[in-house]
Length: 213
Image 1 (spheres, rainbow, N blue to C red):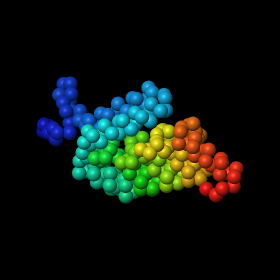
Image 2: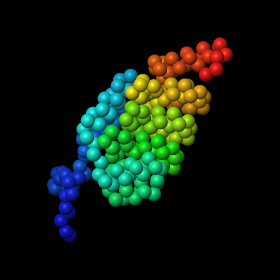
Image 3: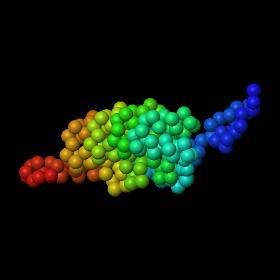
Image 4: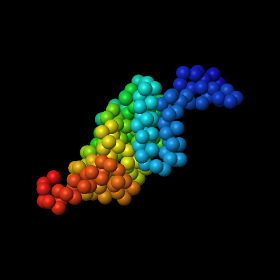
């Protein structure tokens, strides 16, 4: 058998067995998953999520050409091209230079088939785009009820705020979307979160005074 060539993306483990090389962003994603398992406080999780996103961006997450095409395919909602890039060796957990992964781009594509495909892999559901918004936040802002349901069922955190401090629940309230609001609350979104509480108060006052939203 011909010797296997190390292409720079693999490392030798015990007994000379090849193991896939983990980039710094990938390693940080694994650490973040463990933080989510062991930390229960919502505020701590929210701060930690932003912290990890900033580190990933600073670490210089440079995708391979296949991964760049894969991420573009996810954003365009092109499922066939996305699958082809995975077969060509792209890492489904790859991020672009801003820290965005396929979940974020699939949410931006607003195509349920694309999001469903991405969610077949164990991927960071709470990655943030350049403005600090998670895929769940993007789906909520787009009033994409089916995408919100999929992300919540997959385990997306409903309490992660964007860079402006707006959570998905606050966004749903601001948009006047009762179905989204109900879904998020049922999934455990905290109405006591500062921005969500403000939106709840605003909506209550508007209804009591008859002021149009």
